[in-house]
Amino acid sequence: MSDKATLTYGGKSYDFPVVVGTEHERAVDISKLRAESGLITLDDGYANTGSCASSITFIDGEQGILRYRGYPIEELAQHSTFPETAYLLMFGELPNATQLMEFRGLLTEHQFIHENMRHHFEGFPSDAPPMAILSAMINAAGCFEPALVELERSDHFMQSAARLLSKVRTIAAASYRKSMGLPINYPRYDLSYTANFLYLMFCMPNMPCEPEPELVRALDVVFILHADHEQNCSTSTVRMVASSQAGMFASAAAGVCALWGPLHGGANMAVVEMLEQIHQSGESVESFVSRVKSAHAKLMGFGHRVYKNFDPRAKIIKRACDQVLAKLGVRDPLLELALRLEEVALRDEYFIERKLYPNVDFYSGIIMRAAKIPLGMFPVLFAIGRMPGWIANWREVRSNAKARIYRPRQVYTGPTQRTYVPLAERK
Ligand code: CMC
Image 1 (cartoon, rainbow, N blue to C red):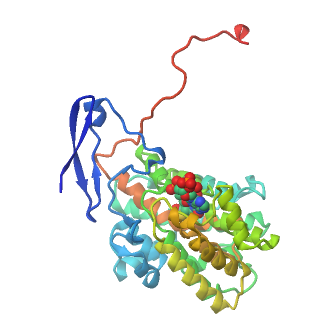
Image 2 (tube, rainbow, N blue to C red; image 1 turned 180 degrees about the horizontal axis):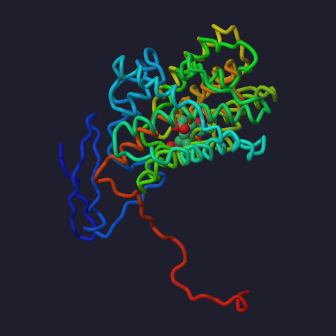
Image 3 (cartoon, rainbow, N blue to C red; image 1 turned 90 degrees about the vertical axis):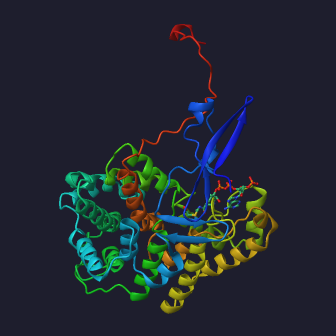
């Protein structure tokens, strides 16, 4: 195998080293390309660009493999918990019993938001998009933790990571409670991370209330499956912001904004909206799919930039969805519709040709509906799940002594130089 790639241009040849990853994926290192040849690369949507070397998550899109720090997602979804998986992503190894207990202790210790922050929620209109509130409130929380966002000591990283991970869940639930005119709950010390989230969302302070274990486990699996996904849009955003040496809270707040759109974290919401629309209109699945094709539109929850055979997360989440609905005795017509839609699309030449399969968002919304999570909060749950991945990536950028600011180039296609025309002379 060659350890260099040669580019021939303008009668000259240029050699570039080939970098090989631990899973044998290869990349041409073009960092000297412009200096040596005057050329840059142009790669729409970064589909062929390796923006960094990273040791956090491995994906093989052709074979449907996803591993966090080497551990297959299937094993983590079956055996791990969200805090343990978060620890693995952020610190590189599975914790031992003492480390896990300490980390859980930190999550519990830091689960409250500063009392003054409760007033911040009052500034938002009740119909404000939850992702806008989440992003703003993460930045606000950062204002209360200014000393903790640097990496001078490793326990500082542990402290800030635990604070951000724990508080994001408290903030998310508080924004929902506020929008509903309900009292904001205080987290409980005796509940797990995910059980506490359901408690904060749905329990009333004057009534005994225990989140259902089946839902807690299903949501924990949803969080694990979302915890990282290498250089996706929001994680790349977090790394981009981190590369300017911005703090952890600011970088995570930017990640929330990048996640918001329907092509990324907003897709779980768009899937349920699509299924509701089909259900209410009574249109057949076949006719809906054929309209999608003729409009060259998108079937939400289908397709992925990297996965070209199947999304391993979708397989797990589909099973979890079946299980939780069966255990709760819930019959959701949208699940039946989703199953039928998947069946029809997977048999259709249009989807086969383009290698379009259900992605993680196709079934996650059904679990969230079973948990009575309101539609607008679906992307917020994605953000809670993705937080460990963002934190791990933030750390990787900030702890790299050789890290440079992320600053891509462009091919300019605007007007060439022209002379300023005074206002009175313009037509
Ligand atoms: N339904 C119908 N056609 C599709 C879909 C879809 N969901 N996705 C892609 N295509 C078509 C697309 O129109 C194009 O067709 P043609 O070659 O004829 O122009 C072809 O497939 C290639 O698509 P692309 O837009 O170049 O693919 P991409 O890699 O740029 O986009 C994607 C990936 C996930 C944004 C896209 O598949 C999509 O918009 N899916 C729907 C939204 C969605 O479910 N997003 C969640 C992604 S998974 C969770 C996450 O990481 O956020």
